Amino acid sequence: MDGHDTDDPKQSTADMTVFVQNLLQQMQSRFQAMSDSIISKIDEMGNRIDELEQSINDLRAEMGQEGSPSRKDETKGADDSA
Image (cartoon, rainbow, N blue to C red; front, side, top):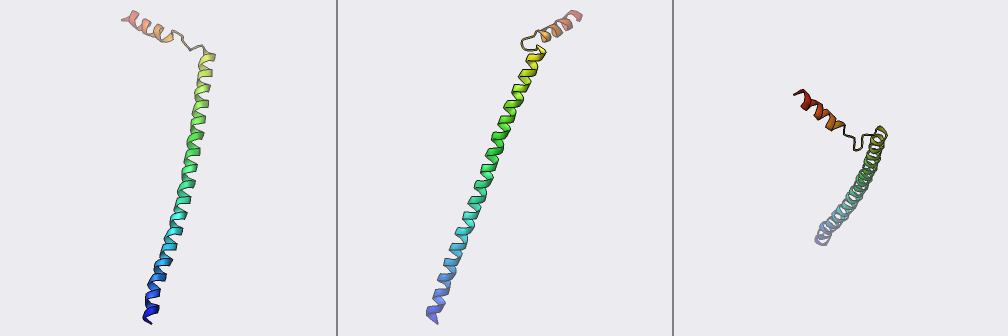
């Protein structure tokens, strides 16, 4: 029986090692999936920001505000009233 008792701890240790390895592999897979998802969403947000920036520039060009002196006129009017 002594030989059988010494095998149980070895088997238990081997089982625990396999369990921990499987658990670590599952965790690694989940973290990789989350990482890929986060990177994908960041890329998508970057693209949307680029599109928004382009839309703003297009609107500014349509309104003729690019390089317009409207702010200078506003400050000039404030200086005149002072």
